[in-house]
Image: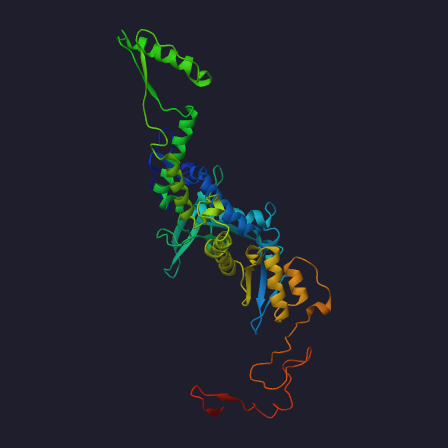
Amino acid sequence: MFDWLNKPKAAGVTRDERSDFWFTQLGIESAGMMVTPETAMRLAVVYACVRFISETVGQLPLQVFKRERNGDKNAQPEHPIYDLLHDQPNEEHTALEFREMLTAWAVLRGTGMAEIVPGRRGAVDQLIPLHPDYIRCVKVQDNSNRIRWQVEYKEPGVPTRRLLRDELFILRAMAIDPDCPLLGLDPITVQRDTLGSSLAVRDYGSRFFQNDARPGGIIEHPSNFKTDDDRNAFKRAWQAAFGGKNRHKTAVLEWGAKYHQVGISPEQAQFLETRKVSAADTARIFRVQPHKVGIMDNATFSNIEHQALESVQDTMMPWLVRWEQSIKRDLIVARGYFAEHNVAGLLRGDLKSRYEAFAIARNWGWLSVNEIRRLENQNGIGDEGDVYLQPLNMIEAGQPGEPSQQGAPRNQPRPDTAAGPPLIVRPKTNGAMHHD
């Protein structure tokens, strides 16, 4: 993470303890480029990665459930934090905006943090986002000589506030920062060399096309300029006549002057290949499948669906689990309650594949008509839609005889089995018979 106490001094900036300088982010230079979260977001691939992860997390339904004794889970829309997670966590942000914001901060800066504000709904009435650039970790020692971590939050022009751990909701990436366990690992700092190279490549391309996609050149003059002023005046006249909007005009060289083009072309510098490699490396930092950020080199009709599934399993699931476990740790006190995302929408196939899967589930008896219609965002058809089918050629495990009739209670003992377990004859592997 950034060293808040040992920043280099810059000209014209005060360094007293009241200065906002100590709560502004310090960039790190690599490959001649200043690498910060802001400059990194100017890279199209970084922007696409952050947007893909944060928007996907923000759009997924997030509900509160209660785990029953038999392992079932039931939605709890009356739970105090249900509205915060599902609808609106504070007066300013919707649930999508809030979760998108904290996820983007955690992806880009390693930590997304919000202040827990009590109110009419109890101990957790609102969640107010805290910008990670204004956060400073503070280590304190309690009366029992145990180490506790707190947060100082200092916005520019606003007095510093001290927040205790139980006043914070924290979403963090890899929690391996030795300086403060409350903060996650900052990928921009860790991968500054890779991102600095990508920024340098982008900056080179921008300058190259600003120069009309032509490298620089040298004008060879057979005689000498008498003074430096004459040389500079000639240079200014050339640039005024053949630079900017006057590019592509025909130049006339007099007195034996010759123009020599210098530099290497983008083809010689493998400019396009360098950009492809940089884009792939950047996507790899955020563990995003290349096709999700527009890199379609290895995507085919036969593997694109599997790549989409991998993006859910490998990219999104860690962030969804981080959200769910952070909610359980910081916002839910009662045992048995938990928050969970519904990822069914991300795993949906095409219409034909979905209907074939529903037909299998319906015919084999683990989905009802109403359940299928709810998965398709449709209303149920009433009580008759809650009936489960059972194939007639199937019987319960360990129960010989005729298959049970449709609609009959499944757990009621049959007359021939009420006295005890039935006698089942099974063949041995060597062809002999034995009794169980």
